[in-house]
Image (cartoon, rainbow, N blue to C red; front, side, top):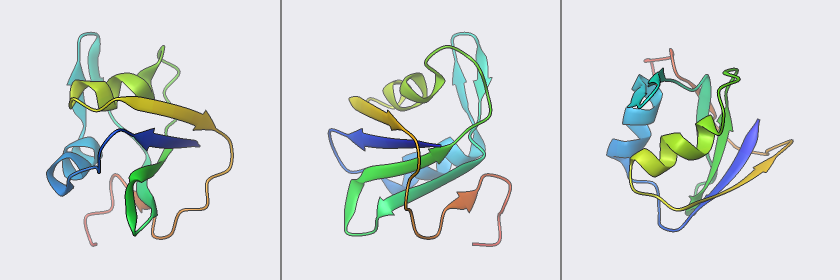
Length: 88
C-alpha cells in the first residue's frame, strides 16, 4: 500500500483511467485498489498494487502528467475502490 502525494488534484477521468489500467512503455499496469486518502484533498491518494515492476506507482501517475511523491506503508483512505469493482 502506498500513499501518493500529487502536485495537483487527481481528476476523475484520470482516476478512472488508473482503475481501468494504464499502458506504460513496458506494458499494461493496473492497481488493485485506488482511493482518495482525503476526500477534501484530492492530491492525496491511496494505492494498493501487487506488481513488482520497478517504480510502477510513480510511472502510472507520471504517464498522466502528475508529479509524484510516494510513501509506502499504511494509508488511511476511506472508500478505497478495488480496480475490478465496477459497482461504485
